Length: 229
Image (cartoon, rainbow, N blue to C red; front, top):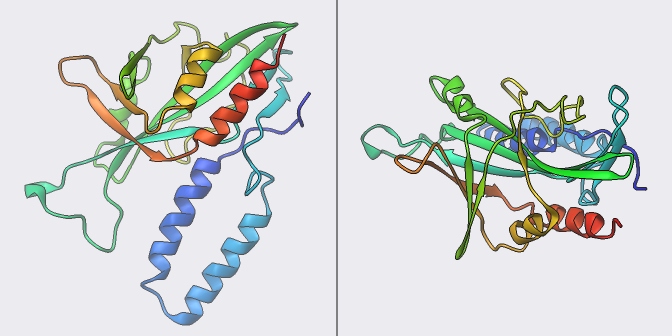
């Protein structure tokens, strides 16, 4: 069994670090030194830093199931168009909608089920709740010449045995949607060069680009799950 540790908010840490560093460029030398010191302390705090691709494994105290989850989830982003097509101001990040996808296995006394845990959230948009309305909508992952359609489960995360939020978004409601999957399909996603995500139906789908390449962590999870009898 792998090490028992709770899934963290590394997506929050990465996005926060990026925003802080961008802001530091506009400050004086003294302020930059303080910010760098804070970031160095923060980097030492979680156990999910540089060597963080090993899967997370923990026992859910409320349901009694063992959850094996990817250490670092995939994060997809849809960047909003600026008025009149203009560039984003230099002092701010462009408004985006995000989808976090965390692959996980649920072990109920040796019987495994596999899911993608999805969170829909937004940053810098006028109505951040609009992206969350896509929760429980079908998802489509485009992997080069392969199309993977994912239908949401009617069951909640608690129904599936997961009461601890697995890699929740840094802001907004942490209400997950679950999509059933299998290990071979996880492997296809992990081996894809640049998966694309779309949601909202075929007529006017909202398309999301891979925001941060965390496919190595997914490959590690697939390797771990492939070794389960």
